[in-house]
Image (cartoon, rainbow, N blue to C red):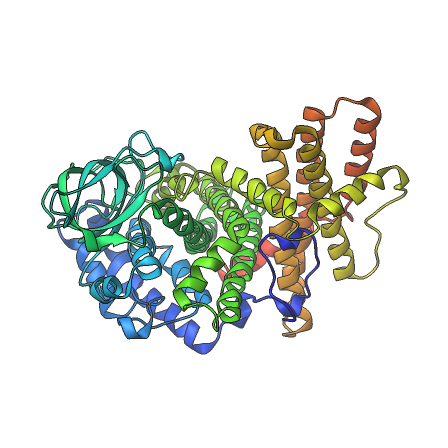
Length: 591
């Protein structure tokens, strides 16, 4: 690439297909790591799901041990700390495969992500040497303690306190944490608390055997039943002063950066679960007969199977585009920052993309498993079928790593701040688009050439987002973030833009650079962009109707929405039929 792509910059510039990474480019080593993950799941996890869900004493912990023996817990850890030192793209591929493991996927992602990475990224050398090798090999299990009964989305409002002991050797922690994954067996916890009367959090490394640490019983949950979740109570818990993570008052910064990481990782992990649910849907549709025919032959079922595949393919395209951006940022800063510092900066840089992946991915999976249950009919509601477990387990993803409501606002807030700071010409372009509304004429979707037409269409979608963002900023100023309904409309548009563009660039690169067969990929892209146009039109009109009262301005904006959401017609029935027929032929997700 000629220059590093900034976070959120996709809204103001076009990218060449050759400059993004697509899953078709995984190398042999990456595919071998993915195969190792699959073999582990097939051998150790999938045959024992009942034992996992029953939380059989010591069983899930033994699975972590076995994963550690295979090196699956240290994929992202530097080699000098007993890890493999792989790229972020590779770690995302592992997250994808492990994401199909139902409850164990949560155990794994917590341990390898929020349970270990705060120490790796923010710990001093002594802390890293003491804890990371044990976490990487599975000798110790990790957990992350941020949420409290009164502090969920507003994490900095937590009440857990830390006070320096009289001899200055310990911080004394008092408070309560809840919804803490891996609590039943974790050996080390990253705990957030406020020192004395500080307004912001600090972070501490707390070992299980420290005095003053107590655990409640396991929570009874709707899904992810095999994931250990308990409350933790700190009653004069003695934490050595050398276990303060980073510096005093830096805990909230740690929490935010780890959330960015968790959001990207979640976008990858839901892929594995979704692909498995597609497989289950296709398999069952070929086995189940009604009216003397396999239900896979019915158009209504083919619609569902095809739409599942379309959304999975789109999410996958966005996930690995962003993952490679993270690696490129790390590489570009290798001379000025340590790798850990560069990784943290990368997560901050791509906060917008991280929020998009979290929202789109979690809602994609919810759609896929919901329609999977529907394909199964009554059997989908039976605990005998695996799709039932997938349906229940999926729901938590819209709450994990910041609710989807918070992440929609994060998308807009971060983009707005970067536009205001003129990191790129977001508001200049928005102003120009508004100024040109009165001059719009004719159709905007008649550009010749397949990719040229798609690129123009997606550029037009961006124009809608930019003109609305500029108009809302002008109208409400500093009070803009109070207009959550309108901001949700705009955020939804921006998310569809990023996912549609990522899918287009993937198909184009596979076609023009790798020379692959893309006939069905074009069907996926055609339906995705066609549906996105209608979705974006509705969201934009809802926004305009909510804040533009001047009749003349309202008319102009509606004209702009109609113009910029124009899309070339698609025979969506035939396109979906072709996609579904391929799934049925292969009897699995195959894109």
